[in-house]
Length: 81
Image 1 (cartoon, rainbow, N blue to C red):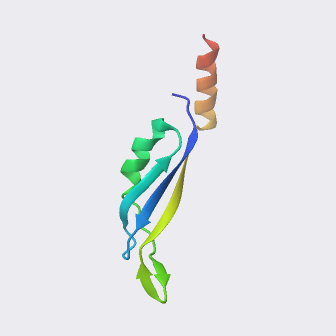
Image 2 (tube, helix red, strand yellow):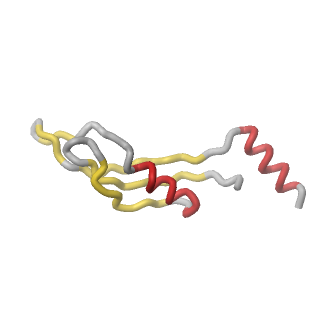
């Protein structure tokens, strides 16, 4: 599609470092379903408070970029119009 963008997912990380839930996703709609699927598979080091693991909200950025080859192809396709 020739689209690039940045998506940020807000996730709740549990005391074991796994994702408990996704609180929200911001960024281009075209990327949000992919991020929603993949973010649940992330694993973190749990946050510590007074030496004990605690739940913590974290913002996770995802960048979707085209390679130079893909950018050129996308630009060439646009020139055909």
